Image (cartoon, rainbow, N blue to C red):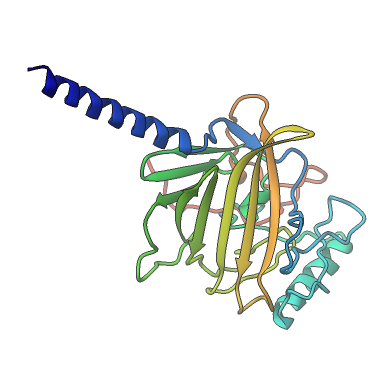
Length: 265
C-alpha cells in the first residue's frame, strides 16, 4: 500500500523541481530602467557589420548625424544630410517623440525616460514613461503570415538562457517613422532583432540591449548597435507630449499638436 504513495511523491517532486528549474532559467528584468543623459546608440564591440550613425554636431542639443556613414542608401543619405544641415543652422527638425507620435524600433531605445518590462507567461509588455508608449511582445510563436503594419509592428520573442530575444517586422512607414535621433528613415522591409540581458560592469547593474537592423530598402548593409539602461531613480511619472509641446525659450510651437474636433465626454 505504500508503493503508490512513494511513486506519487516522487512524481510530484520531479514536477516541482522541473517548474523551479524553468522559473530559474527565465531572467528577471523587473524594476524601472532608464538611459540617464544618453540618447544615442553605441557600437557593438567585436561586431563586423555596419555601425550606427554618430553625432557630428559640437553640441548634444543638435541632432546632426553623420550622413557619410556607408550604411546609408543614397536617398536615405540625402534625408539625413538635410536634417543635419538644418540642425547645424539651429533650425528645429521635427522628431517622433517631439511630435507626439510613437518612436518605433530601434529609436524607442533612445528615449531617456524610464522603461519597464512586464514579463508574463505568454507575453511581455514593455511600457515607456514617455507618452505612455507600449509594446507587446508575444512569446514562443511566429509572426503571422500577413502582418498588419503599425507604428511598432509585430514583435515576437523567446528566451535564450539569460537573454530575451525580440524579433520585430511590419513597422509602418510614415513621415516621422525613423530608426534613430538623426531622422534616418526606413522602409517596409525593416527587420529588427533585439537582445536584452542584465549585466554587471564597472558602473554596476545594467540592462544591456544589443540590436541588429536589416532594411535593404534604406541601408546598404545590416548594421548593429547597443544601449545600456541603468536602474532608474525615483517614481514613475506622467509625461504627456501634447500638453506642453513648446520651446522653453520663446514659447514657439515645436511641432503640430494633435487636435480633436469633439470631446470624448
